[in-house]
Length: 308
Image (tube, rainbow, N blue to C red; front, side):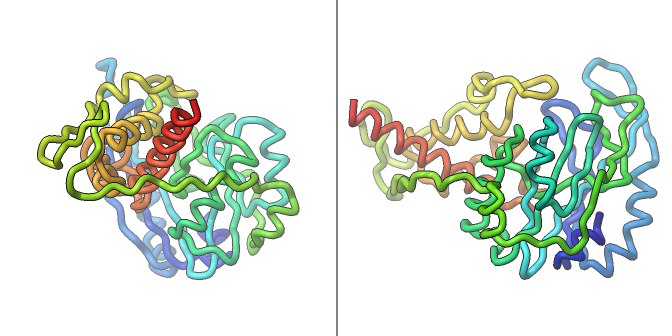
């Protein structure tokens, strides 16, 4: 898997280890960035130690013998990697197969595809927008994939899979396959651009609160994240609530109450476990993107109310 990414220009990998996962919990043990050469040197020991089983307590009180999840996030200077997560149907796999660098299974029936794209700078808004359009075209349940994946050949330690944890397996790989944005569009793998709606611009002084009342920064309060989580829809896979949607709902409420996009993004990492995990996994743009998308949704709602 590492060499497949490297064949398309990946020269740096952020590696994360997490402990046994269950809904609402993903304990990150550590994360570190490696050059390609250093990762080749360290990877055997990383994989070996990750496979060592140790007792872990789970919510039902039962003990489970589990190891560590190994997660990698590839980056390169002249290529961007688009992750298409949670692909379920043969139609989705067939659509992306001609463009995919790697297709792998993280567990039976759960597939990911990765597309290497030239001409985009990962981490830039252009890339994030383009990746979102590709996900919309292909489908999949995870609309905000982190661009990090479980390493092939390691086990997927989630409570629902125990005690026989599945091994992440590569189904097919096409080293060196790099697509251009134009090629992907010609293949029908890019959705139409979203309407451009400017996010509301808030100032740092008096801000608009509920009911049209101005509140100073000192007077404003933050929404209760627990209520946003309780109001989020159930996860499509597993138990619990959709935490990505809970983050989005919370950000919408905060911005509607008068907090700025930047303040909301910063606060999200304090109240949301998922946001903290994404940042720890080198997806540092997740909080800001979530807040920006929420601000755009607030603006759309305001425009609809205005037309009504």
